[in-house]
Image (cartoon, rainbow, N blue to C red):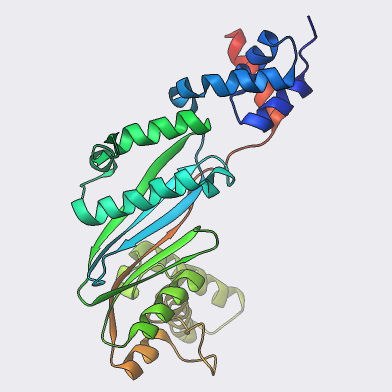
Length: 297
């Protein structure tokens, strides 16, 4: 029997994205024939959903659904392990269909969405079948359903890595598109200062005070300097305070743009794929060591 080397296991894993130990077993079964081992793994893909479930899903896409009247919509983030699968047509359809279901059925949470009918089964059975078919874990991370006070505009950018839904009142379709694109580019944390956590504002103030003291500023000026720094911070992280990315003069803020258009923003949702999630490690040597250590316990 041919010796099963670490390089052979690595190559098969890169071809199939199957777990390392499954690759090793398939190579053993095929007497080291990579082609046959790949076929063995593909035959077994249907039973891999539960095994894949422990693997990190930090790639994926954002999908958006808007009703034809732009009064109701939804934004969904669905994750997978690799960017390659994030471009798979069936994976993209799952994301799109989930966004439509959220808009229509208003599920309370991911579990409720997973239980909704889809195809011949449910969202969960469809997801599980796709995990088995592709051989890579995928998960529904989050969603938001929006009932517009005004009108909805949306924008998806960067291979569906960034998605925005904005509810705006007044103005025209171009304004809605511009707002959505600005949010995707500038990534505000909130509409205005009321949406920024008090501890973040306090932290900015403390930092500004310490910097002013280190710079030798007079005590009488320190509070004023700190307030100026806090206001600058708030302008940078709130939609209304940000300078419009398409401003001709490089100075017009979103608040000023809206005033000029006789419009306002009721709210927005911004999703960035994988934001806050741990990224998958591609360190094969470390994975081998971890598997060996686990096997000895």
